[in-house]
Image (cartoon, rainbow, N blue to C red; front, side, top):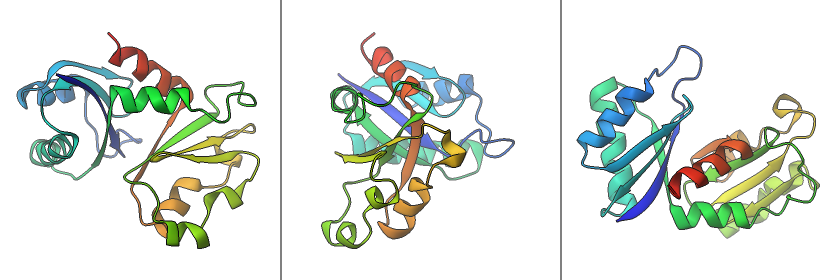
Length: 178
């Protein structure tokens, strides 16, 4: 069985799209997923499955829509893919606060043609780096003072984005190993 992290976009933000984590764990278990665990209230789940990531994404999105009555995007990463994101951190030398280092998970790698004319690194050349289906963003003065990379990528590069801070990413990596 493969270990996966499911990153749900846009749940439990204020009073909108509420999904209690106990209900999310139950929903994922009802889908036949094993060893289901959640982290925080912001749509992070890890589990084991023999199914492929695209099948899992579709099943999870559909089940959430049916059970909770709203649509959310689910970005999947295998345990190996998430560990690679952690190991490849190009901002490790400067980012000294895990709550201010953001990892923006992308639904796909950016199209090279779109990226050539809409490079998010140009928003903050010192604090933004692009990886495999991920963008790292160092926000030394806090997220509110940082360029809106997620919105930029969604609009200009036509990708789905969900962001997690470094502390959450590393915790998910630990949960995938247990």
